[in-house]
Length: 99
View 1 (cartoon, rainbow, N blue to C red):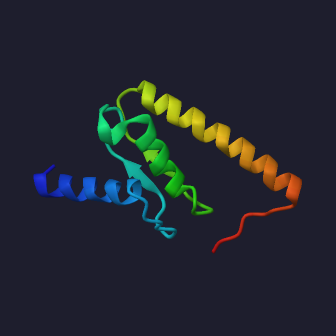
View 2 (view 1 turned 135 degrees about the vertical axis):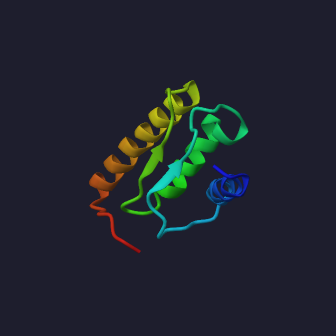
């Protein structure tokens, strides 16, 4: 991959990580998700996954050769939050809608 292409990918991740809501963007691919560090920490992965989850059909695809501890914890936390949200929605009669 050319250096220019890598920079575009990282900028895209930073846009999601830094808090922009791009509701029409899905799926989101996290390349080299198993390369641990600042851009692939548990917190960063949760932020990216959370931004994508704002789209009813949001999906995150993590490309990796192995599942890191950060990936595992982010997936577990996402599933925990999803269970809580689904239960809340069920109790209050809330159905997901496309904005």
